[in-house]
Image 1 (tube, rainbow, N blue to C red):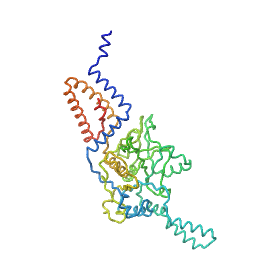
Image 2: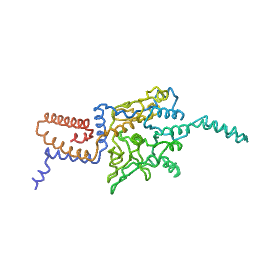
Image 3: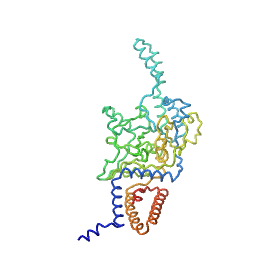
Image 4: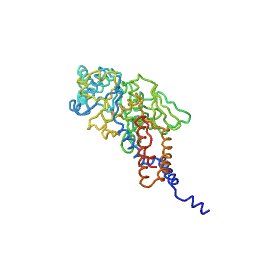
Length: 438
């Protein structure tokens, strides 16, 4: 009996390999934070090593940049400036125009305030001249820049407005139920048309919102649709995923990128497919978008900032951009100026315009250029941890110490190169860190 236990407890290369594999598998399934961090950084390195890729050409970005701030004044600009931009883009023949900006508050207009104060003083003074009141009313309408913007949006018939959701309860503690309902009503044109749920479908993994911060009612009412621009970075601060669906109360809402695609594709049916483990995919007619269980799409970045054409708003308004650069395009309007602070961290850069993330998502979907990371890739990761561990456990102990070190380096290098080649060639994200550790 003692000999049997001695044999069982004796150390051998195979037993050491089995123990290492078991530990690696346990860490893999619990998703150890440090190793997860290392894998995310390894993903970033693979993406950067792949190099830049050209965009499809359907999307351009009209930017609030330093040049525009210098020529048009500090941000925020009067809504009449935005109205003129809408008019010019419509005249250029833009197919769909989306704002990565929310117009949640009335324009801070000193002229409108002055006319309102004058009207109040005249009324309090008992002056009853109808012609004077008529003139003041005309001046008030002329000074109402929000109404001017609403008029331009209504005429253009190609505007998607951006908004955002409040995701934590703490952010909405000051709001009344009436305010929350009012916000919900203003984004009624931003909902998925169909939810296809299988038996036992689980909605728990979805991102849930507590309320929306919409645009002014007079703007929301005349826009074609709206989309949220919430972004959720990973634990290291890098944005690798784009949330395509958020649940708010009993409805499901699409992102700004999807809202733009709906316009561009002439309003296809928008569908969320939900199965037992959460969201399986999203469909815009024939365009199928793979997501994780939360409804997030892994962003396949094409390169650093300015991968997509950028045009300064001041150049667009002044007619310095050729019309053929805009005609028939998806036009995103957003900020790249440093002072406005819409800059994000991505695998390619620590300073990347948030608006260009939306452009990348649109391009990925239009060209079905997705990074693949799903249940079957995780199964392959599981298998590779075992296979690589067994190869190392069998091969390395059979040679001398220095040769064993060399063989280990050769095997790990071969695995890293093969993993990177699969990523570059097929856009498949397979785990690099766990198999390499075995």
